[in-house]
Length: 448
Image 1: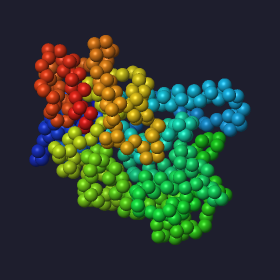
Image 2: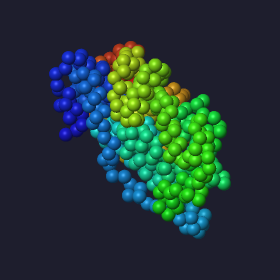
Image 3: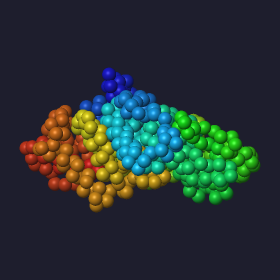
Image 4: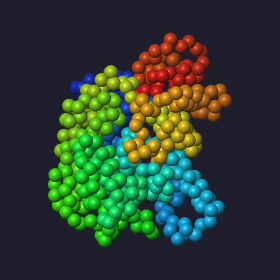
């Protein structure tokens, strides 16, 4: 029994609260996942928003359901092996790494499409863009997969645990040069991004705080043979440090505890989740209220998501269609809503790359900026072309569009696919595929 069916059965209980309409149910599934099919939306319509949120969040499961590539557990190659390679062998090895990178991207695209917990996949994607690492710098792709496993394990759990795990993550240590951070030559890259991007946000620390944090994390590195985290005590600076007004012989764990005690950390995460799920302009008063709940729960993520989805702003009509779909959301959401099964995750991964979202290869440590940055003259044309190809007469995908075409009227298709009524003139066509193409290329379809 699917999680959607289970959700429907659990929600069939009497309530004094008003039930959701079709449009409200559609909005909830669109924002909390990759959109819903007609059947899934109709199942939620008729139950209360609060009950639906409760069960959507409670039922979200981050477990991997598709077998990953067989090489994901391989240890990194030894340095002497790499030094012994000739130019042709090095070229072949780099090609293998690139192929494995594409294979990992393809696997995740298929995982997102197959998952019965779209909220879980959205949260994994969210944290992937928060704690960024890039295959281009890390190079050893199994380390990227291990980081993905770590993110997945904590994506809906506790932010404290996630932050502590990411500070020890080998891919992160390599990406932000933590592995070479030593007492005689401290490297500030990880410390800087930890404060600016992962916790406090810009303007709430000094350069002296960055230097102190960098000293505290000296010795946190990677075991060359296993590729796992290793602490080297001889590389650690155990001297006294002054960090955010506190003085002590701090190590990395002490720095993390101080950051988690700071009110700004909860605000930073809450603000970013608001921009992900509600609107591009967070309500500062609501963000502070939610951040307070977040801290009081000791950084539990599920209660925060429930509170976020139950805000008046989440349900407000003016916020529907206020966010732009990411390339992954556009591709996975379209296939999910039209119930198209695609076996080639590689095609999806390459399509997402063309649209500007190259999974496991964010543009920089800040990740994908999202929002209006997803759309430019080139990517808008690419998005339109991909949607046209989906329903073209010679497209193999067209034959896979099944139950969505049971909505034979254009008005029903429009209600399923668009966050608000189309601004275009009403279409008149006896060919449902022509109408579907028009809706998929409608500007409003790029919004959620």
